Length: 328
Image (cartoon, rainbow, N blue to C red; front, side, top):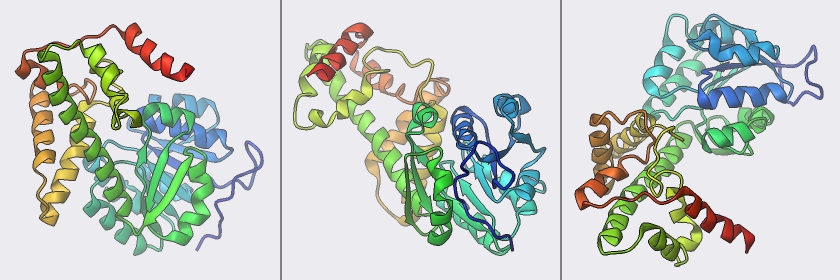
């Protein structure tokens, strides 16, 4: 068994620095991998597109031709992938992590995944003397770039504690949640709540605008109420209020996957989730419109269509409201 600790190296590169593997260098993964590398860890990377790793390679990372090759070299392995259908072959495929993982290694899946799959890969890794964790993140691309990410982690507590400095290299709130699978539950509850709230917001805003209010004036008013003072309503400033869904902050197709996973978990547990299922239906309709690559708030436009109203505030006017609060 390998003997290692997950302590942060004191210098950018040193001979005894542990190797960290990172698979999946998309919008989120590229930023997280960059921050791990900046923290001084020796990095081994893999992606289905080699060009996605160009910046990391130029900064000194090593390329691996497969997830198996990453696992063969690294003590800690991360994946940041769209969802279960991508994670499954990366872990269980003939050139997957499981084929190359060494005893004592720790694998953290940063994806929003299904509870069944994370438990299955953790069990398979345990059979080889390794450790599997579900470790979904929250904070979006901006948080991934700045290092201000929540990382919810489920798995072996002692190994989490040893590896926390690596997690701290790319997230400011890495928290142990409980046994493997717990972090996935936390992430799905978090995301499902957000999308259910946006569905309700579309309904109430369409009502308010149809009743005669200017959408900017309506937004300015309600955000000063007891609910609004918690800044719930500021979630809609970048897309819904200004009618701008491209480029996406987080794409509808990824949000649809998250909501589908949450609703399926509810079905598996026998939990009635009427409003959450309605949220999924809204997303299904938006996906059928061909909006999958637009922002995840684009289903809110469906309610505006049904209500027969339009909302397209001046972005500068919206920003002026936000700036006025900052000046107080």
